[in-house]
Length: 605
Image 1 (tube, rainbow, N blue to C red):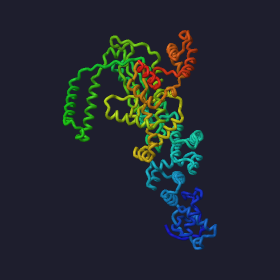
Image 2 (cartoon, rainbow, N blue to C red):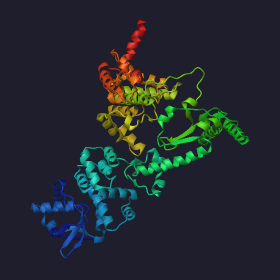
Image 3 (cartoon, helix red, strand yellow):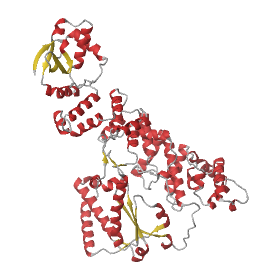
Image 4 (tube, rainbow, N blue to C red):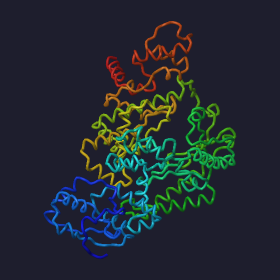
């Protein structure tokens, strides 16, 4: 690189200049005044173009400022005729210009992305570009993804009409028409989470239990396609949901084959647990067989080793290695216990096994399922047919859970109290908790069991999800910077995700969860009537006898209800439920008003 001077009229902006396509900004006038007062502090950089021109690849803004002063007849003659320029090789122009831009805070990322894409078009590889600019290959791939957005979206980003996080979300798809369609449907204010959700509708996230169970390698090996999100950890999507389902079911069936070889009369596999099977079948309990000599020897050896490790009875004195070994021993003892549990042949002759996937993608194997009539009930124990189907009971309690969750989000102060109580109970309590699960594995209802959309609640959840970064440290930094009121609101939103007061069957009530739910509802002032859609669709799910019972509870005194047609009773029940404020028995434990009335009756008695 050599130093020279050149007349201003012979200086042009090089095509390789990283800002060649950018429009002059408002800072040019201020820069011109600085040059006029202090002179040109830094020379331009360019290469020779023809006989009379130099193409400037670094110093575009300085050149524009000089030309502005010349147009205003304020540029000193010595600078007009002799602008300082460093001469370089044209082949290095693009690299030098982009390197300068990367270190300039005012350089818009859109210009940077364009230049990286141009380098690829010239035949460079991502590895070569990364090496040249001292970047990770993944960082280069991110820039290229953004450079290849649909032109209308890229231009919006260059104008700052589209935020970087929105642009990153749109880059999840390579389909320009799809990108533009989602942008037009959601509008310019849409959050990144909503954009990703719209672009991947019908696809399976890598965090889904099916994806965890099969794994990306096995899925891609048989031709499965994955949409990779370069901007999020665990942000990939398995495009062919049908293929993933078939692979998961096939692998579960392999487990089922081995179970049938054990003597079970039938097996049922599925991605989800079959709740109807739970309702129609009971669970036979296994018997404990004696250990074999080999098992007994291993049991004794493990117990002896565990006793030596814990003889001081002070866990704080253990080394990390000793603590880990204790956990390994306890896990091995549990395996021995499980291995010694056997089911009698008569149970296997009529019983079966259900195999489905747990949330973490591991198989859950439920053995000993037998028809209810085959389960021996304790002497004197008789069960009446439930008044309403178990599926409807579950529906009601799931609705109630979702309603409480929506109410607690609107009262952050009370949510903080609930969270504090839950933490204390989990840390120091002796009675098991239920209803509020601090693991945040709360209720995940099936689509058909979901309450009608509350757009305000959905938007709050989406806004909260946007604070979660791939790194917990970054998430924590972001949260700490928020005002206390906003932090409290976010805690309430997260806490609501931990609620689960649902019950699988009407004859398997969870009294502990009900007690928790009732206390929450009372303090929230929550009324389940505000959330439960007790309309004709609900009553159509009930048997006729249950509808008649409900009508009588609502105060209906007409004769002939018992002999009426179900088709006539359904709309009548829906109308009168709304008028009377009636609640199904399954969710009355959440009715604070009814509880207070009952307490008054008890006091009067």
